[in-house]
Figure 1 (tube, helix red, strand yellow):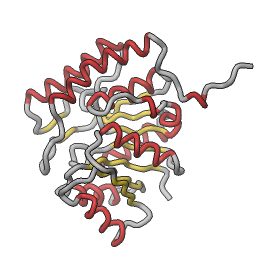
Figure 2: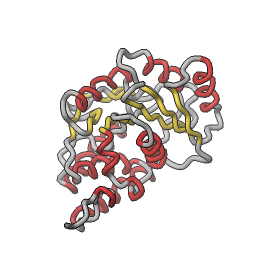
Figure 3: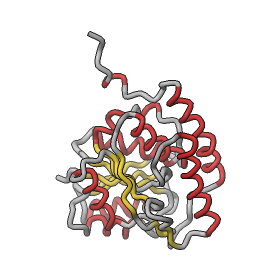
Amino acid sequence: MSDSIVIIPTFNEKENIEQIIRAVFSLDKAFHILVIDDSSPDGTAGIVQRLQSDEFGGRLFLEQRKGKLGLGTAYIHGFKWALARSYDYIFEMDADFSHDPNDLPRLYAACSDGGYDVAVGSRYSTGVNVVNWPMGRVLMSYFASKYVRFVTGFNIRDTTAGFVCYRRKVLETIDLDHVKFKGYAFQIEMKYSAHVLGFKIKEVSVIFVNRRLGTSKMNSSIFGEAFFGVINLRWRKIAGKIKPKPQLIAPAP
């Protein structure tokens, strides 16, 4: 039994899913994988099912959802699934190798050995570590993170990163049912909520490589949600609306 699970949301990732699964399972550190598939018409889920039955039963898990419901809701689904089991470290990772599976043990070590509650695979903590992205997208992503820091005062350089390790207690404390955003802003909201609730966050420098196979799911509406979502997050912080789950609040004496 592993103490760690990697959650991988998928939609039309048949070119990548088998390779990313094998790469994670080849690591010396034992990880389990949960794939959250949003009814990919290209047969992504079927590939996962074959690997489950032929090779990786007990380590590889699949949750299938009806329709393309959004990145944020996929991760919330996966978080709740993992919390219902005994995992102590819960990871977010893309299926397309933009996140290097070899960096998973480094994120794990930052939490398990370094004493941090959240470890972020950061593209910008030591400059700009992005490969094969169009310059316009690099600049948009980089300045999006600067914008988040300016509006919120949150001193994390890569707030939109999707390569993250959470200690179990972080996801138990954040009120997952009240996470508002589904797209790009979801990543900002999760990190900012952890920060507001007093958890320690570590940026671990990684190199982000643009996908080689398959199609990017990024679009302008996702960036629009992030732009206005940051203002909303700041207001919720000022208004005292970012709170731990109600059952974790001790009753008055």
